Amino acid sequence: MAAQEKTALGQQANEKKGWLRAHKWLILRRISQLSILALFLAGPLFGVWIVTGNMASSLTLDILPLSDPYVMLQALMSGNLPVMEGLIGVVIVLAFYLLIGGRVYCSWMCPVNIVTDAAAWTRRKLGLKVSSPFSRNTRYWLLGLTLILPPITGAIVWELFNPVSLMFRGIIFGMGWAWMVIIAIFMFDVFISQRGWCGHLCPVGAFYSLLGTKSLLRVSASRRDQCDDCNDCFVICPEPKVIRPALKGADKGIGPLIDEMNCTNCGRCIDICDEDVFSFSSRFKS
Amino acid sequence: MSDKQGRGASVESGTGTAMSGTTKATLSRRRFLGDTLKTACGAGLLGLGMGTYSRQVESTPAWVIRPPGALPENEFSGACIRCGLCVRDCPYDMLRLAELGEPVAFGTPYFIARDKPCEMCEDIPCAAACPTNALSHELDVIEDARMGLAVLIDQEECIAFQGLRCEVCFNVCPVQGEAISIEMHHNRRSGKHALFIPVVHSDACTGCGKCEKACILEEAAIKVLPMELAKGLVGEHYRFGWKQKKVAGQSLVTPDVEHQYNLPEGVTYDFNEGGLKLPPKKADSSPFSSNPLDSLKKLQNQESK
Image (cartoon, rainbow over all chains, first blue to last red; front, side, top):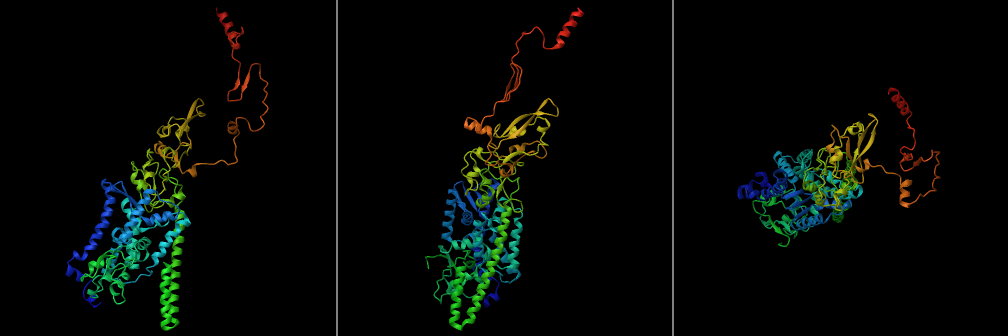
């Protein structure tokens, strides 16, 4: 704790590991997020059709169908079965996230993550500290809501509002007023609720959390005995609750694996730690 | 998730009771119940708002035409996942996804006939690309598509009704002669010309919108409308006698007594559209002309000689 007051967030890591190594996973994540957008945009902008559709459902190189299981589940709840291509797409995506962690969707694919990360950065720079008025469980209530509404109304109601698909579709097919929603989310995260959208409300993230409950790929605090209590990982982590058991649970017999479904596998804790406490690991290693 | 929350709370309150009596347990339980109720209430209100809004959104404007094979609007909103694969697979680039702020359910595909009508591809790539059945994969033949129905909605402005030859809608129709035919009517204004009136037939019109696009007026007189707006429906109990007669091969009611006309000898009356029929004229059967003026003229001719 004392260390954090002396140095700025991440300063130790920057000095010890160099800026590039202290931002390795962040840079890789941004490359991942932006190249997905680029793949989808190459068609409409430059006529290079590699991927068509959007994140709800897409077709890569005219052969690989990929479909968002959450959207498909909403369609299913309103009484519509996908056709074979849609079904294959869902199975592939499900298998992928079951293996590498559901919320990898959030930190490596979702474009809204860039917005909320920017909001978190702004908040830190402005020194704003207000806790969220919402419980982190609110998102699971909203997830339930988005799955109950389709059978009642017969419509995929959530997709009229969903900022995640709204932003992605907006970038690829035309924004309309969607940019206002993106700004609203940014403002919400900065001024109303810390990590408000992704960490408290987003039902898409909630769905993928549940999907990744038993995922193979995990961050592990494998060198937790090296922790010097600088607190940087807790400040940078979008889901700080997930760190404590793994990092501080040695006395209680809790393993170093961050076995929490809300962990997004973003790797920011790995970057920011100058003692290299964290690393990507697998469920079976520990 | 409320389960998990509930379990967590009961464990907490359990240990609380063991440790320091009932006060702490009651407080944490009360707080837990309060928080849960608050969240549930909020979620419920939000759901009410979203649900009501979604119902409103289903009332799509009449100028919005869904791609071929689209389910009826109320089912479509539950099946379309707004992925845009149909938009991308349209070789003519006439489909678009509704952007936020347009008066169409956000993210759903549509086209506007007056801007860019459907070209009716034989392989229906848009419907084939749909990963759900929002665009039905059961549609095999594009001529079976019913995106809407063309209606010659403004008969005051359509120039065919002024007696002018236009027929552009008839000529551009991809199901020519079947979906739109030209029917001749008497032109009462001139008294001696015909009106060439385009007539749409719902059994063949796919609602592609080519006619609306091609209409030469400033504002199209022929428009594609959603089926439910365009079509009337006769009561199920209705029977048309002449159709029933054809099906049964005979009249189903007691036949009318044939009407007797007091007609001159040889003259008949044809009930099947022929009307009054005169007996064939026999040439030179009478030495006298039927026209009384002829004898007058004959007389004059003789005098002038």
